[in-house]
Length: 634
View 1 (cartoon, one colour):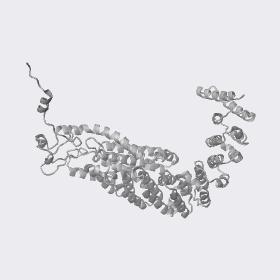
View 2: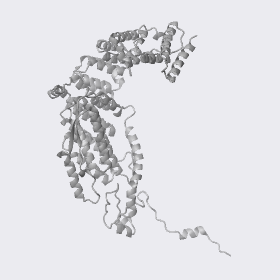
View 3: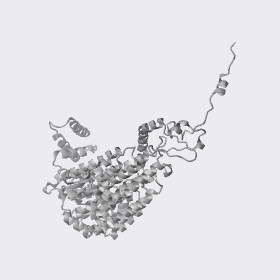
């Protein structure tokens, strides 16, 4: 008979002894270095350096001792890992970018939304010039077999190339040619970075930053700032991601809110190396811009790195003599600061108060002489400051307490209520704060030193705030009277209609049909001569839309005497039809014969616009509106 066996107990006795492993620090492809007394660092090829000592291993691995820790599988993994690491980094980076962007709320208007408007507004027909980096064979990546001293020597030579004229100046470029060249430099930066030519990439960024000191075509400067800072943003992102990729340990990236203690020595050394390279840039403006571009990299070095750098960079701007160049440098620092440390409001406030101290330079002899040479009038010159000041104040005013607005108003008064500053303050702070102080702002506007910045633009900015928030009830009529006194005196029809469009909404919100009728009559009076209305259809359409929105009782609307004469200004058929459609879409059931007659006239206008070229969708929409009207009539 076969003997009985207990397989479970036999298996327990015969199986190999298990040794517990700490998988947090273990990987089969990870290089192992075994030493007797001290740790031994690995080659800086990878993103981490692994060390081990004799006390952590019970026996010497003969293969590791022969291969000095660099076994073939580890070398193979080092070659293969970038793909996996890149995939891991991409997903982590997307998550981190999302978290970074959520540091400020969705109510904060981001810089990218302003970019297109600035490029469209600040243009020039004058010829521009640009310096292009020509490159050299030295800029190519050094082979892995080169000695360290050879690398150092080569890189020093490369940096010196920039000072030795390795550039080519291109003259007589049109604005479009200039923008194309800037885009070429942006692409050259990416190409140099991807081909491991880091020094060449740095030289391109330095060269681009130098262009921001050039104000020879001054009216194009805001657009130039937008184009150049795009390149700086690209560079800052590349450097940050490069150092971040070096912090990946065992294919595990850093947590979102990592501390400098989590960063390995190799990444810290590389980060410091970048800051040392930038510190050696001789000229102030490129040194400032390039360091500001990689401000976020301070997170790898110490917890207080950013909070220590912001005041120092703010103080550096004091060395920039041209007030226009300086204010855009301040705007860039605020932009970077809001991205990486939105909680450090004190540094942002200090930045703006520094600007106020130097504001009088705008009216100094140096600037005036420059404007005479370039044949630029002071009103045009002051508008060049608007994007920068608006952005700085937006950053300062974001979720700021009401007391800060009071402080800003006091500082504006000390500067003679400068119109440029006053306009930016009203644009930046919350509408509720502005509306509550409407009469104070009107007093400041009346006393302000226009200095080429017209008062009607200030009233327009005030009106935009009052469309979002209500002023004190007792002040409403006085506010309208004060504003309309200025608006009705405007001779330029375009200036007039831009202001009237804003204040019509305020009138409809707070007053009766009598005041609305008065405002419409004034608009007709200003826009009818010389058929000025033909150049202002968008604004006139906006006025109609606002009137319909607030006066939703059609019995009341069509009793406004000037409403139908206002519609007669829409002479262009396509625009007239759009306005008629807008009115019909807001139509409510009524039996008033006067209103029915007016609406029948509107429907006839829409019907008569149909011809052989009208699209089927357009016909269908018009038919729906007309049929809907007919069905509502008894």
